[in-house]
Structures are given as C-alpha cells and as structure tokens.
Amino acid sequence: MEQQSEIFKLATTVKKPKKDDAYELICKMVNGQELNDYQLAQLLAFFVTAVTITKIKNSFDWCAQAVNKDALKNPAMNYVYVKNGKAYATDGYRIHEIDTALTNGFYTTKGQHIECDQAYPNTSVIMDREFTLPVNNCNQEEIHEIKGKPTKVALLKDTTGKIIYVESRFFKQATATMQQFKMSTIENAEFAPIKITDHAGKVAILMPLNLNG
Image (cartoon, rainbow, N blue to C red; front, side, top):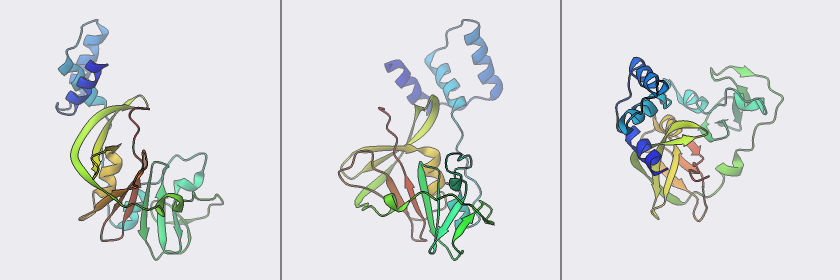
C-alpha cells in the first residue's frame, strides 16, 4: 500500500508518455517483465483523464459546464435551469450559478429554451448555507484512485490548516475564467462543500472528496 502511494505521488511529476510508449510498457507487463516505480508512474500518468477547459465565450457557457449530460434518474440535470434571475447547472458533484436576464425555464448548453417536465434539484439547500471559513489554494495536485480510476486531485486548505481535496478538473473549470476569486467553506463540518466566488457574480460549489472512504 505504501509503495502504491509513492507511485501515485511520483505520477504527478513524471512526463505523460506517448501512446506508443505506454503500449510498450503494457506489453512488457503482459510478457511478465516487472516494471520499476518510475515506469509504473509513467503508465499511471498516461491513464489519468486530461483536464480540458472548454472555450468559454460568456457566463452562460461557464455555468453550462456543470450540466450532467447523462442524467438518467433526473433528466432535468441535463439542462441549465433559470429561476428568478439566476441560472443554475449541476451534475450532483458541483453547482455553477450566475445572474441572468433569461426567462424562467430550462435551457440546453447552447442556450436554447426547451420544455422539461421534471423537477430541478433544490440547489438552495447548499447554496444558502453559511460559508464563513476562508479557504486557500495550495497550488498542488496529487493523483488518487477515485472509483477505480486514477484521478488528478487539487489540494485546498482552510484557515484551520485542514486539507480539502476536490477533483482538479472541476476546480480548474470553475476558476478558469474567474478573476481574483475567493473560496470558503462551512465551519465545523466534515467534508463540507467549497464555495468559490468572483466579482463578476459567478458562484461555484464543489463537493470535497473523501479519500479515506
């Protein structure tokens, strides 16, 4: 277990190998050759999902990043939801919110109004909580196994010194177009969500990862 942890740490520092090089490493394993820690870290880095930042043209595009494009249990989460001057998008792991002049209803990620008879999740349950404990970015990433897949994780730290882990791609997508953003969390709460805001009115809520669960 300790060796696995070291390999995951090493994978954050090695250069991601090309496809042919990764294939060669896999062939060595298939043929019974034992890989060293560096080679294992290279292979791990190859399979980590790349963080892609979709080109953001406006605040609606930013909000729409959080849409769950494959929501089967609640199809309403496939869309951006507008109510009373606010637009929301959530995939169950994060929420993006912006101010908008759009009329109430559901919108595709392209901004087209669409009919949907499903109820949208009550995001106010989380959005309206008191986020008073400041959080800072550690500017550090680690690779951890999340649901059986190697995943890049961003490290944040609240002002009590507690480390908070969030999925890197969610954090980068939330903050990519933010200027001078601020982060906070809920005091005296275990695995509390992180709230990220900027002066333009964008609000992102990210659920933390429980790496011990």
